[in-house]
Image (cartoon, rainbow, N blue to C red; front, side, top):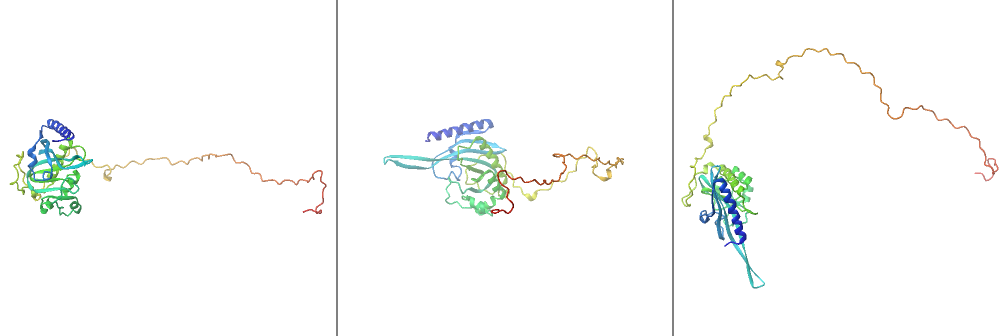
Length: 320
């Protein structure tokens, strides 16, 4: 049983994906319990109950068949008591979106996931041993041969992983699986089909010499492939293309006008001699110049004593 919020999310996801399948001509199923035990890979090997596969979409993008669905599980239940009597519990629900693409041929078993993935158990997982030290610190391998991982994780493959954030993916026989845990909300229909194109680029970057080396004897029967396996392409067998002659020109090539042998000399021109410019009056700024008059000395003025005071001769007593 699922609670009301989980049931609403499942219903909305099924409604969106059914509309997508109707517009694209793809197959749709509201649930598919047979998908829960098909792959011995994460997240299907993680502990938990209430496991469901819902919102199943089956189609093809760019000629690549795929199946996408949501994987529902409850990894743990937390119990506690309130006021010493009432026992309460809360469920931890995880929903991962899984893409399964059909490969043109088999590949060795390989699974890698992000070291920071909180929903995967790390027991038994080991880091890869590649020449990229940052890659070795960022990812973990699950039941994967180190030699296979070194050949699989080429710079082109890891570049596509970083570009499209394909951090959790695996190969199982003739199938490639990719897992994404949507932190907020759920995977929308447009992202569901866009991820198939991104995974198609990842398939195209896988090393050609690994195709056809996987063992599918112990695996469940895979659906029939809509296209036959393609042989591995060897770069050394490529032949250079013969050089093709250029098509005849519809008109003769005209010489560039900048070439000196095709320039026509200009006839000499009789230009009149330059005429001197007449002197131009300079503009006057401010006030016009004034004549200069030297200062005139003042004439000596007679001294007139103040009335009421007798005139004393110079040097009188008390004079300072």
